[in-house]
Every structure is written in structure tokens, then in C-alpha cells.
Length: 117
View (tube, rainbow, N blue to C red):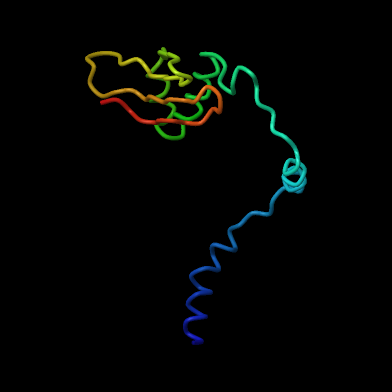
């Protein structure tokens, strides 16, 4: 039994030790918003093509890297059935592909994230 407890503490202590103390303002705000109605813009959280591009770029950079994102400009954007599709431009011979994302206009949720071939 002692061995199990010792092993568990060795395995799980580093996880507990790496937790960062939360900002008191964040803690306070979480309590406040628990009883407050969320704001929902009438045009949706992604109301236009510029917002769709800005969100897409923010999503693409940590996944595909800044160089890939910059090389995929200009962005092609379309809205169909309440879903924005943002896809980059393939330059050169057409080898490789480009990032693509679909965003829900109303909620801002990511419906699809991928890379064309």
C-alpha cells in the first residue's frame, strides 16, 4: 500500500505543482458572470468578412505557423447558410495546399479546421 501511495505522489505531484495561481480578477469575474445574461450581437459574433479573416488568422497561426499563414494571403471568404468559409490562396505550381476554416456566424464556433492538399 505504501508503495502505491509513494508511486502516485511521484507521478501526480509534478502536475499539481505546475498549476499557476489564478488572477483574483478572473476568479471574481467568473463569479459575477455566473448570474449574468451573456450578450449576443444581433448580427452574430462573426458579422462580416473582415472579422472572419481576423479570427481565421488567429486560429491558423498556432496550428500552421506564421510563415504558412503569411504565404496563404490573400484570403478567400464566403458566407453560406450562416457559416463563413475562409481559405487561403495557393501560389506557384499548386503543390501543397492552404489552411481552411469554417466559422459559425452566430456563435463564432469553429465548424471545421483543416488544410487543403
